[in-house]
Image 1 (tube, rainbow, N blue to C red):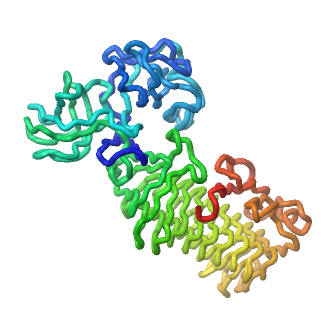
Image 2: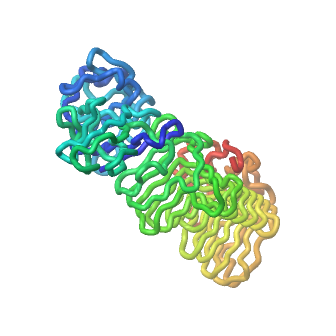
Image 3: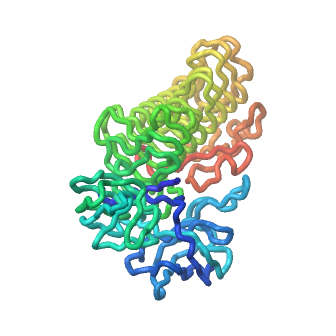
Length: 522
């Protein structure tokens, strides 16, 4: 079951924060006659919507006609709910048919809660976690004679609560922790485990509401994770994942809205010698996206560190850290600013290192493509790797090889003060379709000249000072490189403006460059 947690700065440590969207016990009696409207009215045969539900999010799980997703309740029509189902105003769950994604996860691109006006038998609940305040808090919880059932004299549990969690955070004789509501028995709630012996009473509990830090979630379980809303979080460790198939994704105003630049949540280190976001050595198939980490002036802070090879990290930013990213496997569209090492290991694509001591440090057998190092002491430090379609600009040394058997394909060293390419006297280094501008070419080693490096007489980029690394049309610059052979020439990289660019999918061999609007180290 996928348990999704909500983290936001205006939440509390005692809110429950967790919602099980895949609960097997959702009620299936939702109906509407305005399913394709941007403001449909929905009703339940077993529940009367209340004023207290306004502002919370109706969750609908898809059947063949309903559109699975989260819809904010904006008002009431008698005992029915009016929800916001407009384009860009609600969150749709991914729709997949076979191997084809029919609609992606994120803000809606189509209006309505369904594909038809009149729909019945919808599976539903209300997700009470996407709010700063809980649906209810009280200090009178009691364990029923059935020890996996609880009730409260001050709150009537109902079908809308199924899938939500309750956090029991104080009480004598209670097992404190998080429990999921799996069903309703009259006015009582069946929960996922027993919190105490029958008759135990007086627990303080909350139902719903976001927590204010990832440390107040339980992210060790499989097939779950957390959404972190944009804001600033001070931390020694923001998310140390021990389980598998767990995600930590940032968002700005709606889950899945893929924030850019400073719209991503920011985690500030508070002590030296710490790692902010990490996965345990045995943790696999985890996903991290749309997050920022700053070392905040502390020494030896590592931003993102993953030991296992089967994890992924995307669209994240690290600033002023010892190591920005140790992705171990796949890193996509990442930004490292003013780090000792921007990227340490992993297969990284579409990434940028700015002002780092070493931009990219790559070990044996790794691939590195479509990356840019700017203003680093060493742009790319490599050993027995394949580096293709990469740029080192305004570095002291652009590319340096530290072992045998290395290959550079369609790489450019530009305005590097010592070497564009330094083979370090090592044998069996190959250059294919590489170029150098305003730099000493390279120190040679045996078999280095598989293909001669092109010495450019004019800068090859449109405007590198403003992060526009498209190839220009100057006869001694970019015009010499467009469409060159080898393992794919560098052809017309799109301007480095924002994540809105489609990137390398935009056209043949084009480089995607992450957003720079946050400022170097910002």
